[in-house]
Image 1 (cartoon, rainbow, N blue to C red):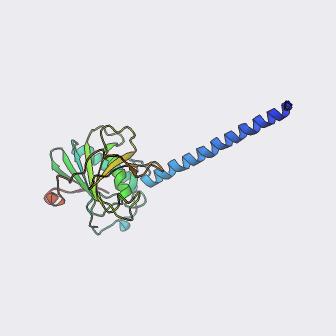
Image 2 (image 1 turned 120 degrees about the vertical axis):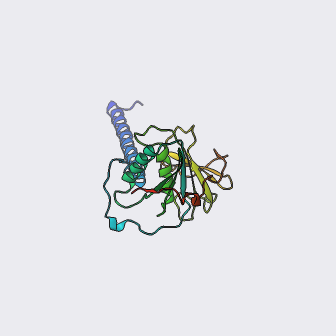
Image 3 (image 1 turned 30 degrees about the vertical axis):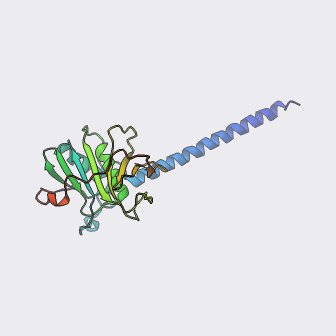
Length: 225
C-alpha cells in the first residue's frame, strides 16, 4: 500500500532536518577542534608584540639539550622569524625564549636556555621551515631527548635522543618528522588524532648534530623574547 503524500513529505522533511542537524553538529565539532589546535600552538599572530609582566619571565637557566641547526638562511630572515615566533607564543606567558648564534656564514644554531616543552619545540621547528611572510628555503634539523611527561609520547619514542626535521617533499605543512637514536621514525602531525604516527621506515636516519653546544661558547648570543 502506498504511503499518503503527507506522510512521504513528513518523512522527507524529518530526514532532511536530521541530516542538517548532523552537518551542523559535525561543523561545530570540527571548528572546536581547530580552535583547540590553534590555542595549543599559540595565537599565530606574528605581529602581536604584547608581553606579560617581566616579573614572570624565567631567570634561571634550565639544563637541556634542545638545539636547532639552520643552514642556508640569512641572519635578517632568522631575526624576523624568531621575532614572529615570540610574538605568537609570548602574549600570556614566556613560552618561547630562544637564543640565536651564527656559527658560520649561512649556518645558525638556536638553543633554549630556559627550556621549552616538547610540543612547542615541534611547533617551532615547523614554523622555522614554514614562516609567514618570509621567503627562504632553509635546511632545518633539531635534536632533543624526550621525557616521559612530554606530549605525544609512545613506548618507542619516550626517553630517546631524537632528531626532528621536515623533508623537502612534505606537502602537508602541519607536522614535523622525527627519528629516534635507534632509527624508529614518526610523523608528528599537529591535527587532533594525527600525533605520533609510527612510520614503517624513517624518512631520514638518525645522526648526531655536527655542532656541539660547547662549540658555541665563543659565538655572539642574540636572545629573543
